[in-house]
Amino acid sequence: MRADAEETGLPILELQSVSKHFGAIHALNEVDLTLESGEVLGLMGDNGAGKSTLVKVIAGNFPPTHGEVRIGGEPVHFHKPVEARQKGVEVVYQDLALCNNLSASANVFLGREIKRRAGPLRWLDHKAMAKRAGELFSELKSETRPRDLVRQMSGGQRQAVAIARTRLSQARMVLMDEPTAAISVRQVAEVLDLIRRLKDSGMAIMLISHRMPDVFAVCDRVVVMRRGRKVADKAIHATSPEEVTGLITGAIHAA
Ligand SMILES: Nc1ncnc2c1ncn2[C@@H]1O[C@H](COP(=O)(O)OP(=O)(O)O)[C@@H](O)[C@H]1O
Ligand SMILES: [Mg+2]
Image (cartoon, rainbow, N blue to C red; front, side, top):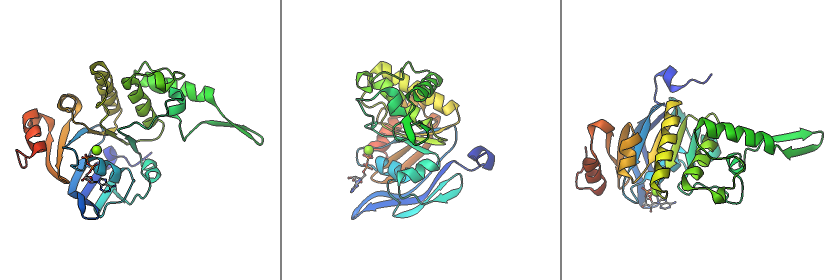
């Protein structure tokens, strides 16, 4: 079907010497990075290190000032998020961007609703969407019910809704910005399970997190950013929370 990374032997995502400047601010400086299918990459760094900017460059919010982004080996030049989505890039944003007054199912399909038509009439097929949303939640082994209102959901269930959204498309990678920042311990475990299921389905995942235990629980590799630069890129078993903390704070310069 698609020339996927497994077939071509290329990483699904490659950044080569990517920089992003906002006027005098160098939010990203010559960042090289790869991400493989079925891999969970932890992206760590202090506030202002450039993590969200990195995600936004990959997700098409703005083009890099310099450098190249390649997906499945092909250089891409995104100017809008929809262009990145068409290439299989899905993002779960920090604030999740869900509508509290709508059901789980309506949120999953927000902006890509299933419609029915008869002659000149078109209407939303709520039944079909609820059915498909229910399938997605059960694939993710989440107890979220399609017709429940997002307003009444736990943080973990909200994450499940945001993650289920990414399953609608032919996503190849999911970029997650702090999915476990504001939820309870039990829900964190649920979200980490969701991430493992995405990984097992062959998805490439980039997980931005401040939470060291989460990164060490689910990530295969960790990249540390500091002041717009990548200061470390290591297999998770080749580093430690202490080393990563030192890299984040600058106590250790590079590893
Ligand atoms: N749209 C923008 N305009 C100007 N400066 C920005 C913009 N977005 C981010 N920055 C700056 O770029 C740097 C990196 O920010 P960011 O990527 O949000 O860091 P992080 O997500 O690691 O906390 C910060 O100095 C931030 O103030
Ligand atoms: Mg950020």
